[in-house]
Image 1: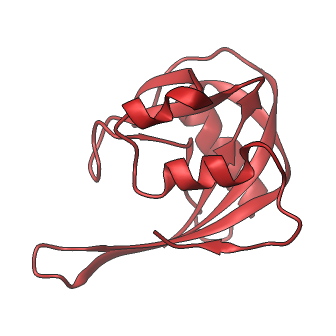
Image 2: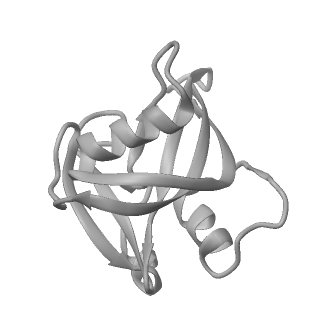
Length: 141
């Protein structure tokens, strides 16, 4: 499954959403979601961020490619995600949870350890927070 995620920083904060549906209901993650067939990555990102946060964003560059394989109770792959995370800038809208998110909030990057985050989210944020990557890397938890 191909997806996109938004890394939206504001000073020492990052915009996160708390998932309102399964899989991983109640976990915090980057805003984003699935790319629909025939949809360009940037268009999918804009749509997903608007649906989940109420904000209009402009993707500026690819930050990281994240691969996640989630096993079912028997150990077989149930979900296999390839997520392309973009740095984004807010250009409008009003912050409000929507679609499949329970909450959309600016979170201080130093408090991430106190949140129930989807696997790999903390690592992605920390890896790109202070320095934009010089080359594209694939992150796997």
